[in-house]
Length: 540
Ligand code: N01
Image (cartoon, rainbow, N blue to C red; front, side, top):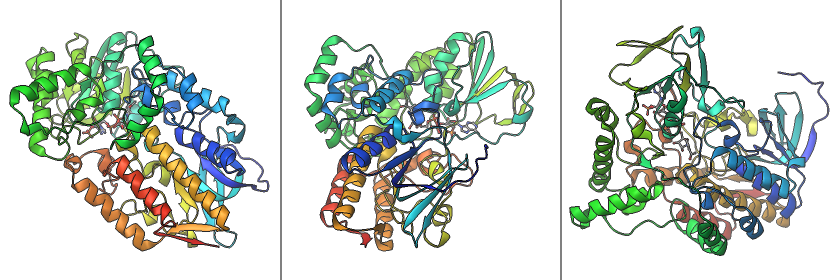
């Protein structure tokens, strides 16, 4: 940590933490639409948020590019052109830098500035924020735009410090890249990240050992360059694409079928799954309406994918390990891939099932499981994140009377609409727990939150209101709604998923995102605002 002589804190109307999709748009809205003085504080050396850090091999968004972007500016939508069906990490970085430059945002962002504490000063009605470099800031409004998947989770496996090779977490990937040529590589984790990285690492590594704890479904992404005709179609239909993403439960540019999986003949169902498999991508989940609510319907999808795995993977023992999946399809975030299962047919790839033969420790030479040692030069942790609450809790936020957010959320996140926490006035959390966020195509969720927050602050200024925070009863009712929405789906049945916080030892098991659908949630937020911010206490 660099120490800087403490100067007088710099004062702004609003402080925003984070310069990813959320922070950039929040800056634009508060500065250019409301005319506020705004400072963005960003730990990274550039814009990009989660994409700044996740530079692992194969990093690509699973949302289709024509909807993985902002929709607030018609000009921006017309001038930007994506090159492939799914945007690769460097292209997303180019896009976000383009947005930041086009709207002249960078001049109000302080990079390499990690926030280490934020405290609400009730007498002054201001947030006091400190950074790792010793700089101090104050503002009436504090907006966290820290993302949901930005706190890397490196499992506490004994012996890591003694490992003689190099190790990396996918979410903190070195900017200069990693050369796997001729190396013996081990990768732990077969979530969306591992499934993207494994085929790419296997291409250059001498040998890749995949340590799988929980087998996972995956559907081919079918990535490809976009044709000139499709690019033109996107330009001509920008408004319609926006309408669809805002009308669907998950913010993607496709609608979910109204068919029920069990109401049609098995042959017809099989043909629909085959077509969806060929089309590829997250659309597979939309083949039937009831896949996430009816276990019997879900079983048809999971049986289809298991069958595909067994068809693709030639070694029956490996195929059995890969298809022995213990949760309903899409109850964990469903990965999509490019040649994931095919990769296990390569002679330089081995699958180790660490559920039956757990990792015991890391030794200087590699990874030791109950069954034996795997000598390695490089270990890749594709082990996910302390999701949703992690990025907020590490900011050390204290509200009224010094109440720590970590204390307020000791039993799991509690807030209203995922936007505000009782006892933390004028603090807004973009895509916080309790909002659809990670269950939605993120830019769609982000735009809705940012616009709602902007309208709320605009309303406060117009009415001469100084303070907003949720009423405890509104929080109570919202937490119940979040739980009820999850319980109406199969999502909680994946008991080890990060949606439940189950991937981080000691984290409360609470289903964090709002599973009632983005379109429904959008309506709830709009109704709350229309009723004079019902459930919030606003004061002068
Ligand atoms: O992380 P994960 P991720 N020993 O938590 C395993 C988004 N995303 O980075 O399931 C052994 O899903 C763990 O095993 P288990 C997307 O929302 C988006 O892959 O806990 N294994 C699991 O296999 C996604 O859901 C995109 O038994 C251990 C894996 O590590 C989210 O990020 C791309 C272990 C972690 O899977 C997180 O995905 C990629 C241990 N001690 C990701 N600890 C795009 O759209 C953990 N594991 C671009």
